[in-house]
Length: 149
Image (cartoon, rainbow, N blue to C red; front, side, top):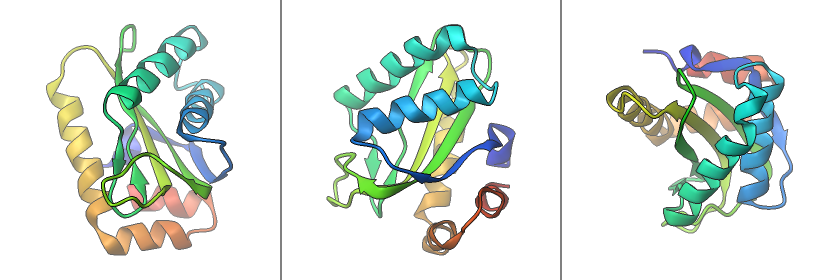
């Protein structure tokens, strides 16, 4: 299943300049609100849930990738935002590499199974060195979005 089902092209940022991982999370949640993917009434709750999850278990993956995510009460479908961070941001990855590729995922409280599949799909995509490199070389949100299709 294509990740484009949960990610709108308008929610792809080609250059995110954030102070730290928490600022990046807030900015990506705001993008979801601005694009109409997330109701504004869920913005603060979404930020809080993702940041709480990040504090409990950092979401930095290897190879400069971060996958901040959380279950959000009141959400009725999976939604996502993506950013290339300039400069890269420390998400406490095991390999110590700061993240320049950040994929934010918000999922409803129930059912859990679909979001586990989605997480697996995202991790699979970013484990592919060729796709990571294509995303890093991409200059436009359209180019990046095509990779997620």
